[in-house]
Image 1 (cartoon, helix red, strand yellow):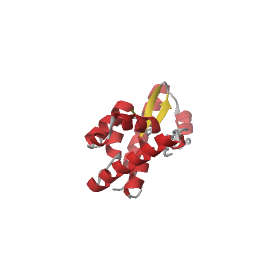
Image 2 (cartoon, rainbow, N blue to C red):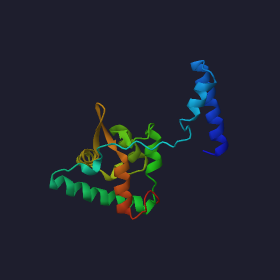
Image 3 (spheres, rainbow, N blue to C red):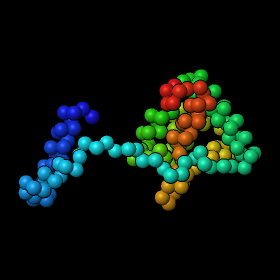
Image 4 (cartoon, rainbow, N blue to C red):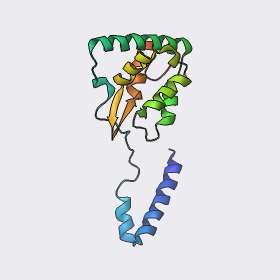
Length: 155
């Protein structure tokens, strides 16, 4: 954000704070000392798909599948992150399994997968978030971009 936008944001936040608290001068001075301009960091999951180990046969199948997908990504210079980020509202690096498959379909990558390969791919990048199984698309994208020969996130 620009400095001007930050100032407007801080003034608005301060007004909201003062309105809600009905406070006096001393309380808002204390509020300003809290450093309202601090930058937040993106949430990083404690467990990501890089720690998931499948049995050796499945690992080989997933590796071959990732190479096949990487060839298509490289040939078409596909950008993976933007489509996944559209589904990731909280920006935690995870999407549902259906959203993951929908993005692959939108990128025309689903036609490269058989049902068995799809299941292995989902198993490889599945992480438990809350009470449901999601897919760690950040790890998937980083691995696929590396196999396609792209720099970090740049096709």
